[in-house]
Image (cartoon, rainbow over all chains, first blue to last red; front, side, top):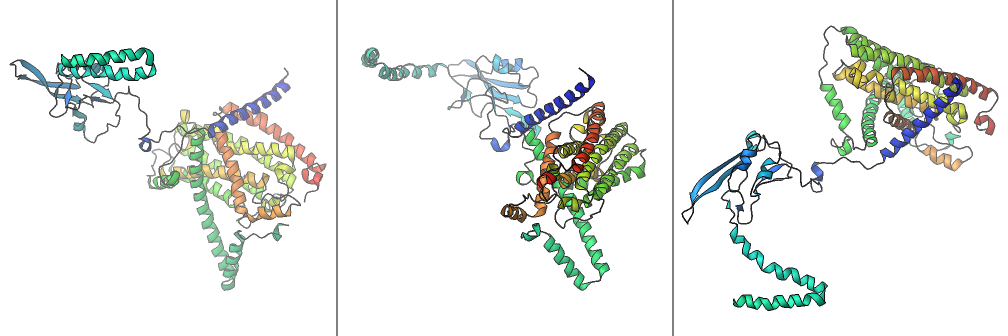
Length: 199
Length: 372
């Protein structure tokens, strides 16, 4: 290619590529804006369930939790964020039992490594995605995560009500869908029920 | 002609009323003095206000090019953002630099602002809104606007800072090179229009803007003028005098407060000045779109006041400048000088000869179609 034709082809390919670049940015001008308007969009904001922000101890409606105060979370914490204090009490049967006094977690020191949640043998604690954790004083970062007056959930009591009722409830909708086969099963259940009552 | 159409929204009505009111009660000397002061104050105000609007517009458009919203917290849609920035910059301390050339250091921003202010005065903003109408307007504008580079070079020299120095030197090389192209591009149109006076040049474009009148040659000159004007303002892909990654902020690294504000203001105003000169010379200035023979259409178009036309056309060119700025990566210094000396200048020289041939052989659109 001679130098003259190189000059002109360079000129025109240059102009062409510049125009192409401008057409790209022109399209970009009209694309929807991706900025999240944070304080305004609180209602529609989606934070992943797995996002670890705050250590919580789930309590049920009776103000009961699952923590046995074994202290495994405290032992596994790499930087001493968790302090579990417990006390020994004597139950009605005269047995000695260790119960949770306070489960203290320091947000300012936590690295959100999740080791406490993984190693907890009774699944008593978990991380929640409540991310707005800013406070004005450092002392507020240290939180007691078990509720006031809460106690350990008794495992054996809860087993019984779960057993019988769901069997009937689950089978009825299925019976509507497949009438021929399932009706027998439905009747069988019905026949059995009075027996159970008599017993 | 246009004088027959009603133009109730023009400022000419107001200015001529003011002038006759003053003249009826005062001697010639006092009338002129008062009018000079008013014009000067208005120009200075317009200078600041246009810069504020441009800064806001630039930030918004930049944000849209980058799929963001831009300033939207201060006032409705962030409209007060640049006002807040101005107040901030006025309140900031003017830092004195050790071992700098104190006098030149303080003088430099004034060169910058005075150069762009002098150019600003010669722009025809609308019918009757033309402060200085020299018969060599184009030459005046080219001469005066190139004074700004002295401010840049002085700033780089007096700061006693290697970044400022390198930035100023790059800016000098760039400015000198591209001023040549810009001058030649304007010269091409001077050949076409046959005048250097802005007012006659605009009146000559009533039915056929210069960019259409000289067709091929005019369009080439227009593109070259936009490129070199863009390069003169140290913006966009030509902003290597202030390349952040290598020179922190270039020639104004050491400036703070209002002195930095002067450079900031002058940068935006230079963008406006380049766009408005391009509007005046190529796009018919403040004239509305007029088509010969379509009287009803012309009447409607002429009803829109001339300053709206001027600022509208200028805004389109400024948008083009922003579009270019946010599309292309920064040039290296060798690429920058290659573009000027190997491409723009030779093309420009050929183009000016082509324009002379077009005018002499009667091949302009006005000659071909017999437009007034």
